Image (tube, rainbow, N blue to C red):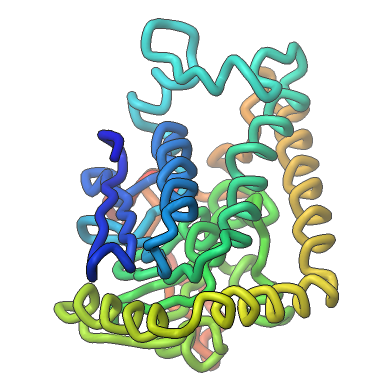
Length: 313
């Protein structure tokens, strides 16, 4: 098994369960290019392994994932020319002269197509989530067949309110939240908790925080005991039914609207920054207050004191 820098990969229960964990706890598992490429490799290796029946995707540290890493030195080094540039920035449109073309092709491969690929892995996948699952963290979670959450889990997408963008690249919100709830959560940036996720049918199980890993593993082993063909055909039947309702076309449509959002902001800014900047339209995401929970009787947005917040998107 290869040595990974940004994830961990282990085999449990005599190899029948693979557990892949995001491993940048100091950034709340914010996603950099190296992490996503390693994750793709680990998923493929688990899929290739005929002993593996179920794959768990987890996150080390206090949160499952705070979304895209938008400000660390690691990300800057990965993208900019130099000795630490990640090789994927030299392929898949990474050398295109047009800002819009480059970003569209890169995000298609590393934010959109990879999640679609993980969704269709020929094994059952379980997202084991806890803490904050923010914006692009939702994409990783939604690519899995089942979602198991700790009691302390918070789900939110704040890219509309803090970056002026229409959701993330893999926009499954209307399918996971329902259309009107998706609009509300995107337009307000408010969050839901694990109990609301369970009520919506997004979350399958909720476990105490200190029992999450153990009980997710037991859940995975229970599913692993089902016949391999039964597991695969159940997954294909349900995914196929959702696709027949338009899921795949909806994802593609939303991806290109996401790119339109980037193109809009690129045209607005002299430095070609591809999202809104703090000012009259959005608050400063680096000093913004905590994410507010969605409540049925709360319509106001009072001023909030600034607090330290993860660099997320």
